[in-house]
Amino acid sequence: MHVTVDANRMPSTRSRKSRLYPWLVFALTFALLLSDYMSRQVLSAVFPILKSEWSLSDSHLASLNSIVALMVGLLTLPLSLVADRWGRVRSLTLMAVLWSLATLACAVAASFDQMLWARFLVGVGEAAYGSVGIAVVLSVFAPRVHAAMGASFMAGGSFGSVVGVALGGLLAVHLGWRWSFAAMAVFGLILVALFRAVVNERRLARYAVDQNQPSAACVDAPRRLRAPLSSLYTNPSVLCAYIGGGLQMFTAAVLLAWMPSYFNRYHHLGTAKAAGVAAIFVLLVGSGMVVCGIITDRIGRADMSRKWTTAVVFCAISLVCLPVGFWLASGALSMVLIGLGAFFSAGSSGPTAAMVANLTHTTVRASAMGTLTVANNLLGLALGPFVVGILADHFGLLRALELAPLTYVAAIVALVIGKRLYPAGVRRFNALNESAAYSLR
Image 1 (tube, rainbow, N blue to C red):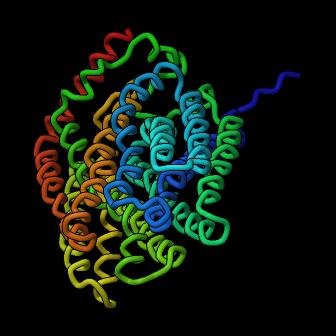
Image 2: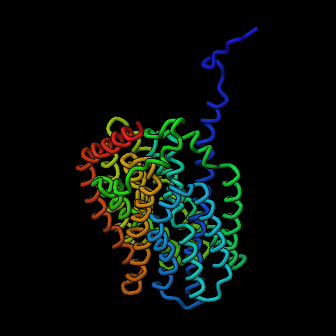
Image 3: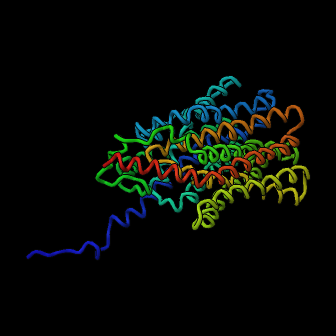
């Protein structure tokens, strides 16, 4: 007897998997980003020890920090292009192995020069992880939650910095600073093995939900037909998102790098305690990115252009709170203002990532996020700590921290212009999609 089964009335195992797998992808990709920033920011926890042991200036310390972000800025775009073609999962795996081994090399460095070369390799390994990783995450989540998911993913940088700074300081005091780097390296290698065992390109294609993703029947079409790379730079609204996003990371990067030294010098805390207290403020940076992303998605649900407005507001809050907080120097009010400024310091990351994702074609999504990462690193993560290090050598660290938030003025200008150009940007993006759809017929 033949029995007809109504598939629509049966519980779907695939449906349950489709709900679970995207979150599994997010969790593993996010965990590797934690490892990325743990390896990058553990250096900040041992700044006081290295400064004393190797007789380094603040400029030397800043160069050890900024060399990583500089390499990320220089190599992100070319490596993102390679990842779009060679395979994002394979690229992420190779990157994680490289930065973990380079972090292990930091643990055995015997001089400033050796440490600088090891940090150089850390930067090479980390170069395109953020851009390719966020492209992987956004590919399995609906566009309506891109700001929240993008911000949550990028917040892994701050959370990883928290763990790297706090755990690094603790290990440095009890076991020596070299164990701080070794522990981060081992953690990274364990995570990359788990990631590679679970995530692969075929599964990502199966669960892709991008609004402009080809159908299953055309799953190989992106390999034959890609949006032109020029589309990454010919949309004025996207260019403003790149610039605004990069500039708003300047002060956030300063907080990630210099807060342990700030508490060590101006609040007279030991290495472990200064790192622990600084980790609280770094945690505020990451928490703010997540919360601001969620707020942005809610406010922009009916009108996407409102996401630009939230980005401007977040920058303005930090522009006011941080200079005043550092100027007050000490006391409860100072800590509250610095904490509030830290919470919103990178709050525009989610909105800018969402704008870039919404206005670029899926076949060049990793490259678009790579361009955003270039801006974040060259204008923010590399430039911020290095400029503050130079200013600290001349005017003192406290004065340098007071001046750093002024970069938000330029970020606000870029974001306001981006909002004004957004309607034209949407029209340009829709025309690109229509052209691609016509070519596939």
